[in-house]
Length: 142
Image (cartoon, rainbow, N blue to C red):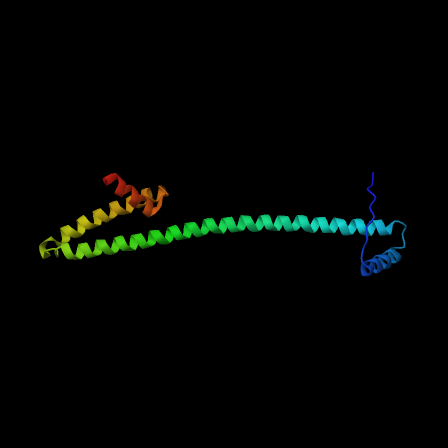
């Protein structure tokens, strides 16, 4: 059963409503126009709520992405610092290779490099990142 409602509206809306009713020229047009206006109002509210929910989901996603980016940035800084320490140590403590041992040293270096390259995919599959592996290595030595 339809709900009957009496409302007071400002004069400017009343004039617009009467003009629209006259345009339609149909009995019950006033009710139809008010019902259409209410339907549009509620639809707009639902769309606004939907946009607000979407905005919240996007904000949460961006927060997670920012966290991941910051973790990546920290890992790059860690790796840069570790690499710098390694190079300083290498250049300070590794004597030059004697000329007669250059070929054997190059072959040994190539073998070690190949082993390193084979180990990288295993390290990457762990998914923890360099910082996590570094922290685990520190804890396992403690």
